[in-house]
Length: 314
Length: 324
Image (tube, rainbow over all chains, first blue to last red; front, side, top):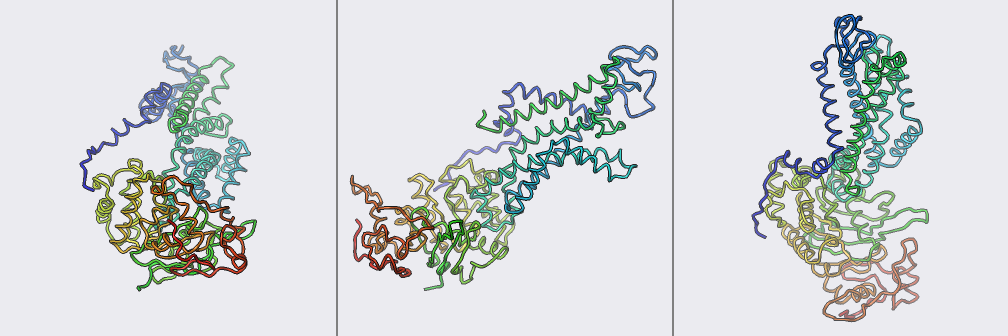
């Protein structure tokens, strides 16, 4: 057989991405594009909060108690200062606290999902590939954990962790404990999905071939199986991110999450709801709307991704 | 004759089940010489693939080798464990699987799969492995090999993919290739090409081939010797011409007679009455006796003689019985 001249033009990765089916369905879905835009705007404003925020809400020197309870877009009666979303009881600009609060919410959400993902993928791969007693122990643990509501598991872990940390480190550690608690309550679904996909992949002949040529189980799991089970993981990770942000807000709202010195959106809502019935509605409303927009758009994006990656639902 | 590349002696594989122990491979012995192609033929469930899996050490528990020996290049490999087994079988045995759709990792470029295999077993640099990957693809007749190493498996047709699988099986220069139904998933027109390719490459390199198939056409076309398996046992073993044209075992005779041939025009195909016994209910004596037209009481009681080359496992081998 001779070498036929096959015109293969190498395409750049960017070009390939633009021509992919995924990008095509993205362009055809208004919901996906709007929620992606909202997510991008919110994430960017969280990242660049120090540049965008008019004041630094954590710098006591920039606060003026006289500015307390200024309604949105109205000049303060004493100082004449005006705030986009009003101020809280201590004269902190609500808009600035939301920007800073979103940083914490997003950081905790992303880090918790990442932690849950790494843990879940590892345990799922191992139990799917190795099988036997290892699998039984890991998956039964997962089943037991599923019988508890995840917010309860998170509170339990948070409580235990708080109990063992020394008092002076508690506020610093609160964020990390929160990540640990949410991550540990969330690994189960990653493990289940990865295990299921691994069971399918490990019987395919390319895995047999890799076993035959003498790759170690670790190399087979990482190089051959993991990339082939990642697409459902991507979907779960996106939807989990929305859930993790809400879980963080719930914990903070219940007072077991981010401390008032580092308020997340949930903490802001908890603080705000104290003023709801005395007429200062803006302290509650704006953080709540932000949380809603963030969680909803991430969730819608995850929904779209699930449909887009599953050819049968298209 | 030189020492065989692969030598299987009285091999049995057992699977304990709740209905008792079943023996999908029962006392099978054969050799394969360097450069020789041995065809293993039989119905589904006759133990063809099980024997192959036992050789490469990929039996899935609880299946295990219960008896017998496997020798590869003068080294006994059936009792090797873990690392030693992994190194040896990967280096010395290449495998061509049935379904080229699933025997390549869909997310790795084929060049990467080739270099991965070579780097695992050959003492060569990455650059050298990449060069050899291109050469390997050229050798199996992939046009534009230099560009195609960067393609993913889904960019190939089924026949081309099977060529890649053959390149993959041969790239680490094994002394034995096990091809488990390599053409079953392919179009008839492509089958002949793939068989011819496998035959040519193995002849050139002196690689021994165990070709597992249920397709008599493939056997006739490609193999030097053929082993017929029935219910986990060897029914007949011999040079392919003798076995196909003058089968000694009634089962082989039935198998040949039930192969459709275009030259015969319209006629009813011969059928072997009954079905292969379930592996947990293999009859005493000769496993084929309930379906055999020549069976006697001796066949129903005494275990049949074991087969060696050019013989059938039968008390009353057919003499000069032409099939066609």
